[in-house]
Amino acid sequence: MSHVYTDGYVAHSLAPDRRLLGSCGSFSARQEKGAARLALPPHLIGKQHHTVVDLGKVKRVVMMVTPEGGGGFRDEVWEVVSAIRAILRQQGEPMAVTMQTVFVRDRADVPVARRLFNAYYGDEMPLTLFVVQPPCDGSGLAVEAWAVSTASAKVEFHTEDLVSVSYDGLRWIYASGGSLHLDGRTPYEQTAEAFSSMRRMLARTGVGFQDVVRTWLYQGCITEEVDGVERYRELNRARTDFFAGINFEHRPVPVARNGHAIYPASTGIGTLGHGLVTACLALQTERKDVQLLALENPLQTAAFDYPKEYSIKSPKFSRAMAVRIGDHVTTWISGTASIVNSETVHKGDIEKQTDQTLTIIERLIDAKNFARLGWEGAGATFDDLAKLHVYVKRPEDYEKCRAVCERRLGHVPAIYAVADVCRPDLLVEIEGVAFSQLRQSAR
Image (cartoon, one colour):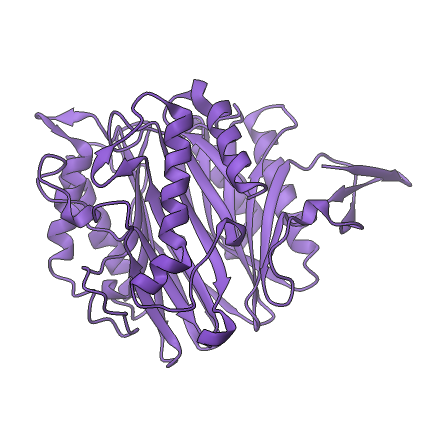
């Protein structure tokens, strides 16, 4: 980050890494001349990377912030808050953070972080997940935060576990159903309780679980066995039982039919401890130009078709969920790993697993795959990625993994965290979000 010292102030370069959609297209803003600067009182703002998404009638910003000034954990939290505040102030219009995921090194630090975030956000506290996954760079925390322009959108902070955003005939609902305090229950009980809690939260805003397009499941000690069964397998069993009562194919929002089962996109990833943290994103609209597409990958067996050797009841999620809104397509990419068909490949090699994972994502969001599944003119490339999460199993693999990602992707706002992946032989898992436009001929 560049600094210019003038009259006792520090001007920090806070240009976005990327601008997506609108009239600006995709580019690496850190290479543009005359990058935007914001004059602020002299204090250190943490390492930040963010993307600005122009959706026409509303602007969204996704921020990935990691402190780099040292000091204690309290100092690191304030550094992150300062960076978020500065990024939002430079947008030139009022902004509100709607959801943030806080990756922490130590569970004992969570109460401190919660108090400081509450002090900053006040009555506009976003839905906040505290996930015990140590940031790979050794810092005490790293934060992904999503914000929206309140000049065009109405944001309602219903409870600490429920936030809704309405604009342009769309209503997005963020709900959490799990916390760090679900310790003590079996993995099946934790999962069943968390999904039931998310359903209750959604119901408070008149939303059913069939409206959910994306879930996040952060499970403590994901590959540990309880009574001879891996915790993740029990999570899958409970999720399958919960989904049995939900008809995802008959949503209020139309779903493209392509012969596959239809489930939300999802990430199931490990954390330290034995708790379970969950969240979901749902969509409501009566607009006629909105449609969903559950994406599967030509390189992989659908997760819900995995043989029983991987789980008594297979994982029920789609490889991605695409939301077509007018001329725009948002693609929520599920947690993806080095699996071809249903088998782990490149065991023990972090560089090859990372490269394979990125190739799988590339094929998943490619225009050919969208066309194969019925959406001509849609699709995305790595240039359309707004952000990434990279979950690295072994801390010593971080630099090699990051090098592969940066070589393949260039500058994409990302957080790298240490986390166990759902199979013992998987070394990395990657998730992301892409924003793209339909080709002119398909509009």
